[in-house]
Length: 71
Image (cartoon, rainbow, N blue to C red; front, side, top):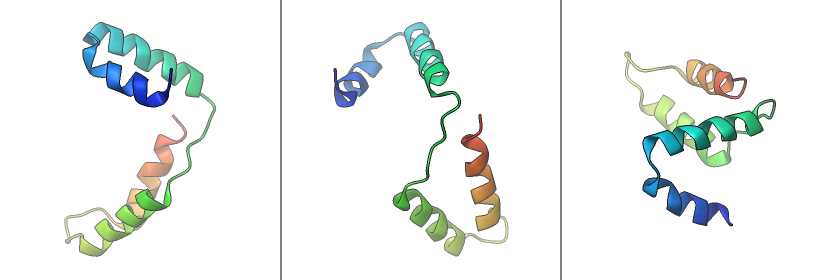
C-alpha cells in the first residue's frame, strides 16, 4: 500500500483507530530525525520577514522546529 493510499484512508478511521495509527507511527519514528525541507525553511523566512512586533523571531521559530525533531 502506498503512502497516498494510506493517507486517503485516514479520514475514514474512527478517532480510536487514528490514535492507534498515530502511536504506532510515533514508535516507529522514535530516534529518527526529520530534516526541514527547503519549502519549510522558505516559509519560515517569509514569515519572519512579515512578522510584526508581536510575532516570533526567525531564531525562535527555528528553535521551536528543532525541538519537534527531538520528541
